[in-house]
Amino acid sequence: MAREIPDLIATARTGTGKGAARQARRDGQVPGVVYGGGVDPLAINLDFNKLLTKLRAGRFMSTLFNLKVEGQDDVRVVCRGVQRDVVKDLPVHIDFMRLKRTSRVNLFIHVEFENHKAAPGLKRGGVLTVVRAEVELNVLAGDIPSQIVVDLTGREIGDVIHISDVQLPEGVKPTIDRDFVIANISAPSGLISADNSADE
Image 1 (cartoon, rainbow, N blue to C red):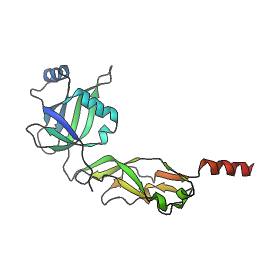
Image 2: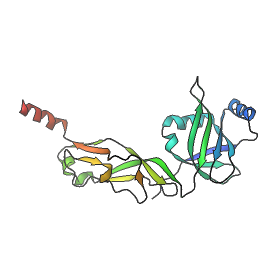
Image 3: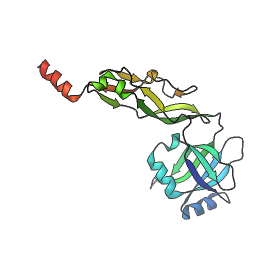
Image 4: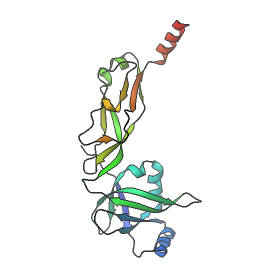
């Protein structure tokens, strides 16, 4: 099941060069270029405020967007660079790369935990501590999973859940080689303090 790809609205920029880019900035736009995909580069402008909101929300460079430009076919793109003003640290130019459905891309995918009631450790009062609510995965642009699912069935207090414990969709690979931790089930604080006092 592929997740919904967020739209990115832009307008085609008439004229090229520094003059057209400066005019765009004066008009509250951020100039940009879309390249790749075996098609000529396309000069675009994006609304400054909307772009800034998306940049500040995080994960911009690892999000796949559906770029909508009037008069052009929608195209899937990923950001490949943001030039910022050295003083104000605000975006002044942005580069996007077109992706085919068969292109591979690194994206952050949400982690969903299910079957809480089937975990003995949680029934005994254990606490699920989520280390990574999202995991960066290498996926096909045409088949992006909406989430990856961690089954908590049979999990006890003290259990640690690694990425190797998760059944990833076909063709999906973690971007990190090591077997990193996604979550663990820790003892409830009351149990820990009772254990400590017994030790004393």
